Image 1 (spheres, rainbow, N blue to C red):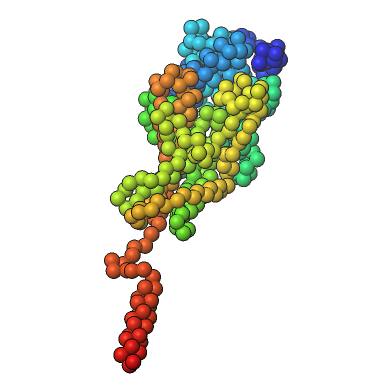
Image 2 (tube, one colour; image 1 turned 180 degrees about the vertical axis):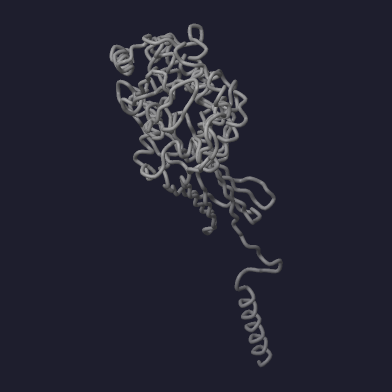
Length: 451
């Protein structure tokens, strides 16, 4: 990593486009509380969202500090450009941390930043430009406000707006670190559904109109975009106490996939087929910080009394997923080709077996049915998810200090009938053999008496 330090610095500088950091002040942006005066409902939706805590997210802060220490500060601007864009544009970052950063910069992806974005210079790595010209940009061409100018922005209604930050490539190796936008762009929904249609409407996996007002003094409209910005992060939203966003994230996760289970007996073995389909995500499943995200299949088999005799995909005593489990995630490789969750160390993608939109994965399992097991056998399959592995969290926060909840995205159950012998059932064919022997004995006695 040290050998590429000069290149990283150059690339991070270029990412700022034509706007030099420090050319504006953070005070040039309104605090979200100002916007709340007219847009209370939208403010309340945003408050507690992952966008609102983009720079105060405890997981991000811990990883940012580790990256900064291990790269001598060279990741500071690169990461913060999307986590505190005002902080970067105003020159408050670097350095990282909260000591020298203003309150408005701490509020991550906030109202006045997003609605001052006037141009995209591309996809990924914070490719945005802003214009502090007194006009707030959004999806309407007839907005009127007594406090600011309003302007239609088609960009704000397109996935390309989200793609400015929701694609991340390593600035030196160019390998993809986060590819949510690209996954959508290369998928089956790119001509029918924008990111906003799922993540900024009441519909969980589809567009759903949301009639209402964008502000208390605005006109009634057929559709108002919501600002919960719900994804799959139920862990951090739970930690910060935002129950609404936590519940919405769990609901979204449970609507993203289906699982079908088929269990049958083959001689003395059980054959299990699990089919997982990405039915609700317009990107791969999972997406985002996929070197940390974990989605995996758990299988359990129990006898008639409920006693478990087969289990794959559970957690061990350290909170790690069974290594034999089918896991859907990305594995990044460092310079030596070893797996790493430190994106700043990554130089290759070792594997990526995530599920494409509308795609189905078929997984097969076989296990021996122990002698003496009483049927029927109950087989249960789950598709589980958590935001980060326990090993990753232990490295950031210390062993066991933070535990990500395991969320069941989908599940199914099936039974295997073993069949029972009748109480008086003997050895197959014995009755016929006994009858034959009896006839032979009778024939022998008759012949003997005849002599």
